[in-house]
Length: 139
Image (tube, rainbow, N blue to C red; front, side, top):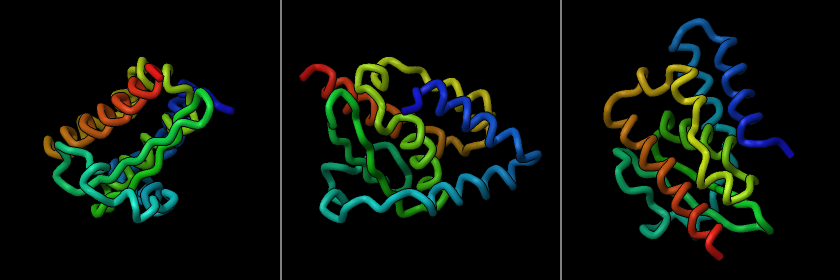
């Protein structure tokens, strides 16, 4: 099992392979296409991430000490963004998810290349994932 830091390092290395942001966006889109489908039962208001311009559904499940995320979005770039977060946080200890600051977002320059609305949505997705982790850590 890899750690959150190892997952972030892998993403940083993947993004370093691309020289321009058009290629990086294509990579983000491809990650979204590879994201395992979320069960339709979780595509509802309870699992909707508030603060996103597009619709993003996020489900979390505790498995032992770890938290497993599934997600989907109706917008292809946003689906890629949530896929990045799922790649980093899923199947990690809930306590680690709750306390981790995601360094890879700034390291790869993602925040500065997103529109303000997408950037706010990214923050909302991270916050919802951390909220799940805090809740699961308390149990």
